[in-house]
Image (cartoon, rainbow, N blue to C red; front, top):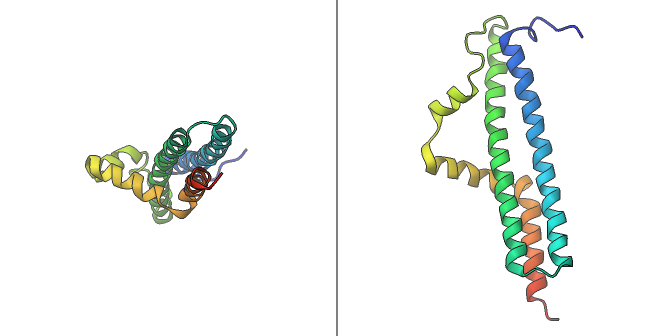
Length: 144
């Protein structure tokens, strides 16, 4: 496979690596959603308590929020790398700074929790978990 001039630079290599990781986060988030549905159905089938089913769902929701937070950081860095490539594809001075950039801009523990929370409430993240929690609540409160 032939690489373009941009792909053979440090910024090009970083972009390729980050893009693969961004897509891996997307797959992982989908797998977490699928696990949530499967475990929810298993909890129903095995007659687990409402609290257990809801706790499992909530834990997976938080796990996806954490995955989406990582994906968001990678996406931010991807946009920055793309901007640097557009300005000067051969200038690799700013390459490979994902964690340094994140560390320089992180807002401490409360900021990290805020990032997780903001990703958890995004509609594409929250949808299955809210639906599962509401379904569990409805099943638990519906007359027998």
